[in-house]
Image (cartoon, rainbow, N blue to C red; front, side, top):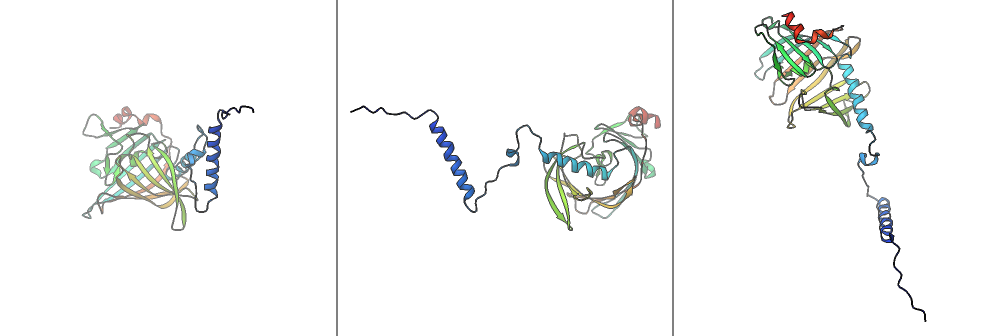
Length: 277
């Protein structure tokens, strides 16, 4: 009678059986009614490949930027009326000259007592020139200009240069489909650290925005209204800003006389503005 030798399993058999069992289990789960396996979108993309939704979000943001302001150098007059919770009002007027997203000069035109004050933005550096002060004073984009309006609201023309966009969802508002973008600041020097932005899907018109602090607190909301043709394109000519921290505090910005204008780089320097004074 021959001796039977105990056979050892081939190396890797156990691993292969586990893999087969895992595959069968997954197949059973897919086949069972009422059970859905949800995988993250990023898990389906190959590592190192660009996220297509990121590119889509940036394209939506750039199109909305082009609706709000020209991509070329331009000049525009802005009237701001601010209402306080006690119903008192304050009115101011500015002339803004902008080149790209990093060069802006803001001149106060009213009230007459403040005429001659100039704000210069070059890059993300901001200064105010006062007739009574020999040297310009450094400012931040987030500092209040008037009412609910920050310096950066007038100085920075476009969102796409300051924020990384993410497409969150679509929403139907008044029967129209809108993209909802989440904008996260590229660094701490930007006017707001986070913005939620609603853009109409069919024509890229901005509808509204919500502005948040570093801590995630809602600071204010904005509605884009009264679309008219300015500088060759239909644009919002009225912005309504409501303070989220003080009920009844509101600023209305009205844009007028927007025109394309050739603006030399030397205009956006401290040396040039000192000569103007």
